[in-house]
Length: 386
Image (tube, rainbow, N blue to C red; front, top):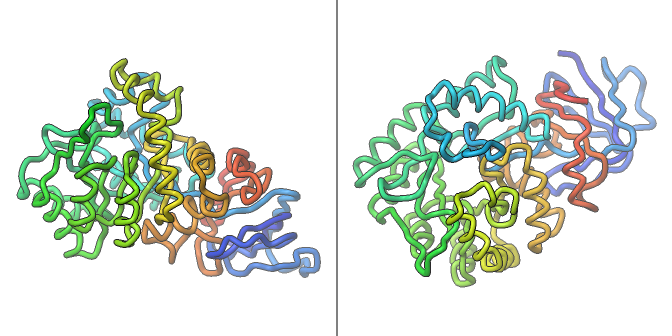
């Protein structure tokens, strides 16, 4: 692979997401080699290929911090389809990966897929056999037999959780995922389905090999148990209280926001009547809780939870709930990479990192909706769309 020079009106660069005007980026062997502040005065023979993006804004490739490859909310009965056979789920995963990549998602953090579909697809993508985001995977999600989790598999007792945790680790997962609560709570009490002992086992197994943990957790006592057990990242947090925001902040834990499951009416009307009515009733409460979490300064990433090609809309919702544009952009780029433990590989336009890039019509630091206007995608310096 030769060298490529990409010019753009604006390049949002570095860990600080600083806007560089009329800049250029030199790519060599799939990695960012150098950023030039003055694209107009560069020598003509600097690179083998020159791509001039004109008035576009170039940002780091987006990272979906909460995805499921075989769960596709665009389909009718998408939750029931999680009972499909392995072949059907793999076929679906290959399609969703392609769809996500062309929308600007160059990396996805997968929060559980059955049959180790995510682990298989991670390897196939690395080898160039399928097209899609680079994957950060958790393998088999672990839930209680009486608990929530259409994607997870049922477990009872610490030793069952330990066994699957070890099998996941043997398969080479990047982190471990458990399910604590329901998604949307339509009862006065937020049920929690895992015991502290079950949580402790998962955390212990993850720490023994230096990987992290994540838990599907809306709030309630289950959230407190997760923090106490040492879970590294709390997913969804729809019902987090102000006191819990303070606890999570002081414990220096991550959260991942997936706001569409509370705010996207088109998605809600694909649920069962009972779930739909519960979600509509809870919307105001959830918006208040998420807004307080955002104002509380928690470290966050943003995810779609299977709403493929929908990451830009999730980002828009988080802005609407009170986050500033730069923080939201960080939640799908530089901070997302930190959450995924891949900031030494991707997540920012920095020399030495992978040339995972997205060109937009508009600047998301000024208007977050620009994330929906993708005009070019590059992964490891290769042009995906342009």
